[in-house]
Length: 246
Image (cartoon, rainbow, N blue to C red):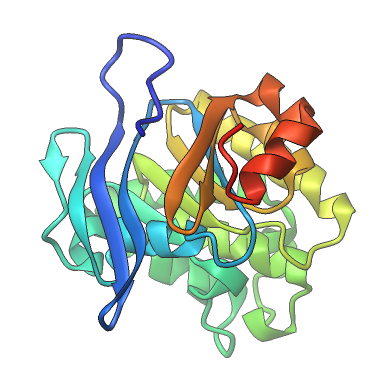
């Protein structure tokens, strides 16, 4: 099942026939999705539904198959680091892209190294405008930051690649609700900048706040798709989470 585009424009991120596996066990089974510029699509589902595995397969960090296109570039056979050079950035679950013994400033600098030197200053300014606390914590080790601050840093590192498409795996997991507003505001800015956002999330109420469309996964397959307004139908979403196509 394909998540249809919201209009006739060519999408930024196009995935076709995505499969993911661990050893010989396939956990994601032929999923298609599109994400347009300035749009956020939420991947919903319970633990084990395949959300993280799908993002990993798209990013190249999980073994898989399928076509991944960002703009005019086909990335499906590239290694993860090569995909990053072609406009795809990934914020893994539990802030897995942070170097905890390095300072906040050093982490951000590391994320910026893919850009030409002349472009780094503007990108860093954008990151710090989204998350001003990172400027205040610039000399602190990343490992001593709060969970919310680490999540901001993880997103900032990914944005240092100036991506066309950004994948976010469970960004609200374990965070205080006060951080949700900061993330929502940041995502609004990124949408205004034309970035395509793909979000894996269990928190349906947060997904309704930030997403334009959604896809519910169960057992590695698509069971429901729709617009954000549909997320208010709690009964239908609950059925989809249980693997029942409502």
